[in-house]
Length: 163
Figure 1 (cartoon, rainbow, N blue to C red):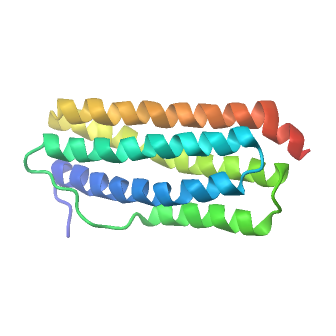
Figure 2 (tube, rainbow, N blue to C red; figure 1 turned 135 degrees about the horizontal axis):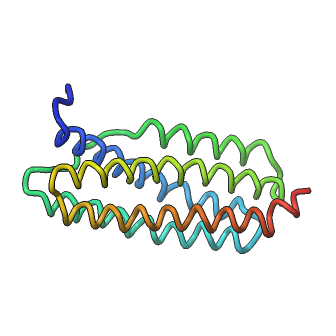
């Protein structure tokens, strides 16, 4: 399919993001189990709950727009980021070094999501999709907050233990 206008681009990105979030819901429990630090494991579990809410929000976005439907597609970028995280788990022993790597891998995902939701918000605003923009902005705020929490865990706790 050739994307011809902003509305089609919005639909494409919304569909891609929906798949990305579904992939994340499968990856986060693995990250929580792989983490050694209890605070980091808890952060991954908390973000899983948030991500499930974000998936519901994406459905609300589509429902708020009568002619927008989420399509089935695979987010190859997220698939690659998750694969990198798995490779890191496989290459490290459970402990502080792995935890530091897990934070880095998770932040790559968060930064991808921040860029994605930022783009979706901008397109929604341009297209006059006010309710959709507000819903997407709520998720964008959560993604930024998760990134900040991961940075704080890295700087105050995990990286110091990794030596």
